[in-house]
Image 1 (cartoon, helix red, strand yellow):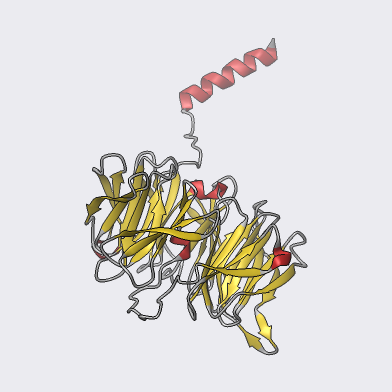
Image 2 (cartoon, one colour):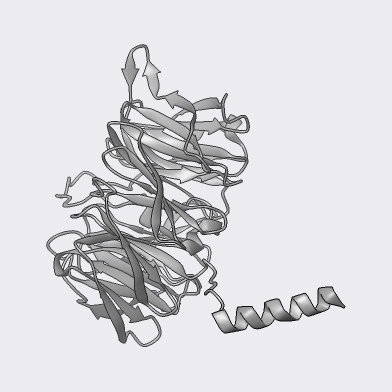
Length: 388
């Protein structure tokens, strides 16, 4: 009886004092403010910011991955900074400088290892996701005494990471099943692979080639076959058209059995059958595409462009196979991120110092958020996607 009375009294006291707010992490996100070394934390349901955090260093080419539960963001800065941010408390948990020049990172399938890819020194470094303790590193020494910039790092199944060596012309796959003693396999890939991606099912790793036309593809289920070249005409071609900004392979989209990718130097989006990896169509657009992003259901593909057309957005209907909406939402549209189920899309307008939010069904403007030269937008829904 006394225990019951104590329980009732505790409930009454709790009700009088008020209950602290409790929230999940599934509808949160982070906006990179590249000019000021800050990040803005946002709620994707209310479409409002709830915190701003400074002191993250050089964010000129920053990227973000999330812990499995979505609570922690790992921000990779260009200055080699790796910062762990608590999305619920809105604060920096820990920050380290792990290299001299870095460009992105990834997190393992089990969520225990965070890996940074580095230009200087060339290679990758693995850290404990809880403490940011350095566990091991794989120097990108492709020849005796020669180290390569690492690009295109992506997590792949089995706590492995695939990445490309720009200077070495190879794709490497490092197995971190034992995070202190990784095992690496090397695959010749072509001249100057400049970026990479893994398909949504985690099977294929693709690396774009800067020094020649084509794309190197490695079947991660059958690595004994090595990397092979696909899309041999993908690139600048014999015309050697001026390229104002190389497209990002992470901006490719796979939807409805087709891959949609930006043509290099041309005002076109290419369509590729992912069963055969052959080109099956082209869609004219209003500039040189940089990101070609599919809405989660695959019905729409949103396209942004290199300068001087970087104030424009074209929206492709994948069923109709053509552009169905043309927009000019702001100056310097750098990045796009869809809400987890695709009902709206967030666009960073760097030169207008704001992020704009649109309804993807009727293209109505839903709101905007002030930000200092925003670039990347990263939602916690990425925590459950391969290669993100």
